[in-house]
Image (cartoon, rainbow, N blue to C red; front, top):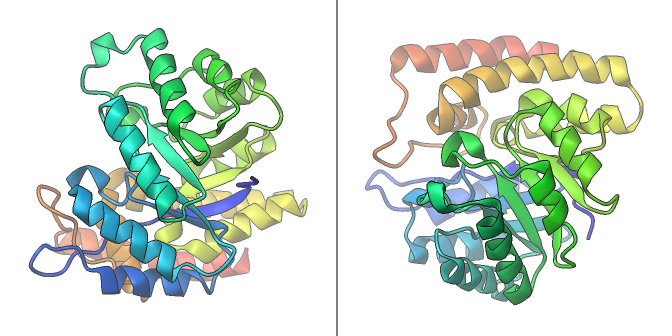
Length: 298
């Protein structure tokens, strides 16, 4: 299964009463269907997965599957703290028709999670999973990074097909690419490093920024693929600035507000995450106003 391209790391819209708004989620996916995104990741980090109940996750997964256009590849975030719960969530994603499971590292008992423990966890999940497994390393949230050596060992499992590396470390991504077989697919999770990562062999990206700026993220991938490297580098610079503000500095609330400005239904994050205050909203609006013409020229 080929996961080359750009995926949106979908946000989860919430209604004013704090409940998940499945109609707003469906609206967003239907709009993304009009773009050239390769597919969607549901209930990942940008989807505020750690703030959702199991019932809410099920509703989100079912809605995304129903709303996604035919041919879009779907990944479900299924990582949990226990191996058993991860397997259960992964089997549920398979039942709902997802193409692969995106499995983040467990992290709560991080002092106990030595390499042999992580390898055993992922191998057991992959053994039990009816669908392919994609590793997920996001050390800025978990405090645990999958190393090139660990990823190389896990890449030997026939049901582990790739990794989403959200470390933002291009050198580290290159080491993973060097330690894994050619068919193993490395996708990056940082919009600031898409172009250099593609240049060293990454297959694509899963991006929070693609929720607000899907066309621009896809254009960057296509410019690289077609060999227009100068234009790709220029657009990479533009998107890096956007990602620095929306994703790195303002987080999910920043991504959601940018979505609101562009006709998507972002809304507010779930408590304890806080919405943007007035000055932050103005910075997002001003950035989008300057980004649009520059990105269109690219």
